[in-house]
Length: 369
Length: 257
Image (cartoon, rainbow over all chains, first blue to last red):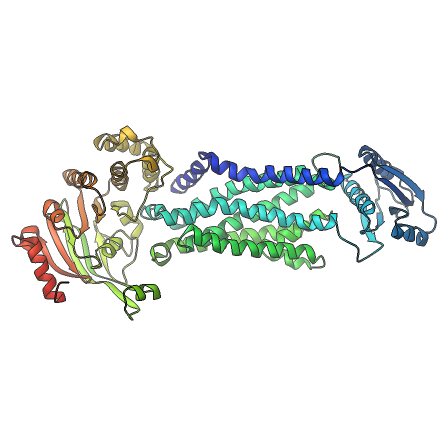
């Protein structure tokens, strides 16, 4: 009953303050507007014309691809691949856009197979075609694998870099959502002396810790969800693909991403709550939390730049979830790695709840000058 | 007379930070705030802990209300140990100090309900008690006004009422009239008299002689964390409380600055 009253108080505080609600939901709207705007600018130029070499039996997939390209107002010319060396040279010199190589006995509706996309990262048209083809091939939900190959290894990185950046952006949005409510609720209450008033009651310290962390995590999840929706809804525009909400990823990929995002929220909330309990003021807590945020940002950024890490990294809190998210965004369903990351995040959340309980029981931390 | 509060050799030592050492121009790293303090307060009386600033009054009351733990010794409130049964003690004690604040966003009505729940009270009991106390202290007129918009007097009334939401047997007030204007201070002293009328046992700390003379049945004089004198107001004051206090102070500390 005491835990329930504590949780209700936090929800009451949030849902009866329009300013807090706006601060929490605004990032999602801003992300949507910003990404849509970027997408509009990036893809608002004149219609593109693609020249693509095709090898293998692929009428169904090529048909879907052509339809998508035509819907975008672009043109495409399919050429049979006779000499791969010459075709590669043409792509490298910019005379052709890309090569699509379908494996022998390719059967997208049955046995599957693989599709190779050879493109040039240095060419804008080639890069666009690759992102459309990759998104379409992932999105149609057929059973085949995609093998991407670039003709120039040192070419500039465009859309892929952005994909590697997205999980970091999501984590940053989650962090700011958690920060805005948790600092105020824990460090703010401690600084104002209202937390001490609760400590004088017979409520258990563990209940007070949970009574803060559970509702704050739920509220932060709303913020994270808002950011997530902002990203998901603006993704098609950002990627220049016009087939609706999912932007080329399957429902399962999105669900997995959502689970990963939701597992990060309570961990960050409980970590910020513990830091806030240790701090003497919101200002102090905010300074410590900023360091934590920079750390998480750097780690998330690094994960996007080191694609060849082993699966063991999924056992690192937050970082593991970011890596798992990146892998999902790359087009696969990394189930066990994702669940490992979620499990580790939950385990560390429990540890932070214990730490918070200890801190609430410590007179030096709570009442020390 | 039945003992309701019994302190037995309470001791509390604090570590001085570098900053505190600089401010106080001292090289000592430890400070004994309360040094083997023992005293008893009886049911239904107002007991005053009188002492100068830094004598250890606040530390003593914080130990009694279980906010901090004694390094040695123990205290018993209605027979419950502050060391062994802190949660039980919190349910029978109401503690009010200027360090404990109410969240400005909420209304007195909401906060009363919330703190009632924090003490494990049934909703109906809380509602009944709210009706009674809000009417008695005139809070019903501003029960729905957020705390941040209340005047100092109104806020003090709300804080007082919320500290006794759970109908505690013992009410502890730390420097209850400190920093208050005369009108608000009167709200507090009237409230204390009301509580005594309700049969509550009250323990208060102060350095104001007139407050002790006006309210207290018994008094304990505390100097340097030790009990210097204890007894009824007549016994301790010996006709003039202020004079007796300074005589004791001079005896213990030497000259009075």
